Amino acid sequence: MHPYTIDTGIRKKILWVIFIVSIILSSFLTYWLEGSITSARNWLQQFAWIRQIVDICDGFGVTTNFIGVPFLYVAIYYFFDNVLWRTKWFKKILNVPDLRGHWEGTLTSNTYQKTINMELDVKQTWSKISFVSTFPKSKSESNVASMFIERDGIIKVGFGFINHSRELPHQYDGYNILEMDSDTHLFGRYFNNRDNNNVGNSGGNIGTFDLDKQN
Image (cartoon, rainbow, N blue to C red; front, side):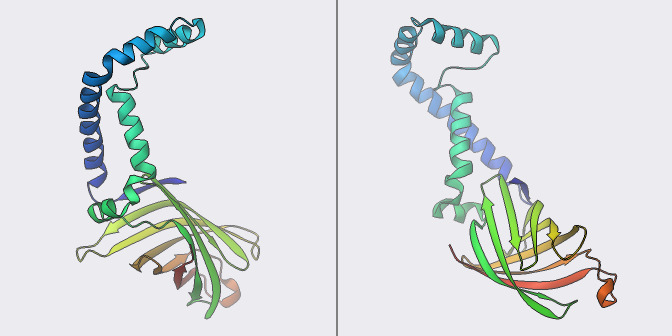
């Protein structure tokens, strides 16, 4: 997977919220658990190998305090990045679509005037995403992606890709722009710089696609 951008300031706000929650949670846990944590750490340090690990961490400035702000920040962010962002409540607040899953449908080429089967597999976290499109004779993988929130609230997702074709002796690049009108249906358009000398068109290939979510 690779990072993707969102054309709002929501990412920065989320980082600040997680940081503030980490401070509050750390203060609360320190108040209630510091004595127990200190006793447990002292007991564990009777083992030489644990004491050596703690000394090495201290030497590099790495905290071994799991109720400290740095540790909690990383733990909360990891949980948010992989789970929380796609829950029903957070999806309404963030307005970021959950595209994860396997999609199937068709792609229609305006250049070649034909329709072929298409499959799209999407992996996504809050910070990263990947699109893998499979066709009868080729496969493409995304290398960059962005989400755009339009003034009317419509969300569009654009991603660049590299296509590995069994028909041609070389790869070609392109870009897809997709929209979702429900959680299980998306549609969009594409263009690429494929060599179309065989159809007398050197301007690449353009077309549309329509997909339904399978799982």
